[in-house]
Image (cartoon, rainbow, N blue to C red):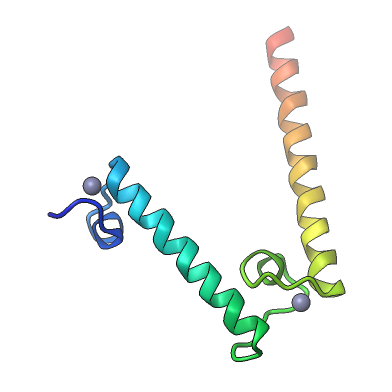
Length: 91
Ligand SMILES: [Zn+2]
Ligand SMILES: [Zn+2]
């Protein structure tokens, strides 16, 4: 198999530095293209979702709200994890 290709990353699940770099570049390209199409109104943005905010670069009120909620939920989860670890450490 050929390294340094995103298809090797996907099809062969190779995680070497070259394949990972190719995958990252490919993902960034896809994301940029999706944002461009969304901005041009050529594809529909799933408004009111974190994905709309992150994947489509939408900053409408609904998407911003969903994104903020998601971030808050993530922080709460991290906090719970910290408390649990602290408890376990003290036992
Ligand atoms: Zn590889
Ligand atoms: Zn939106």
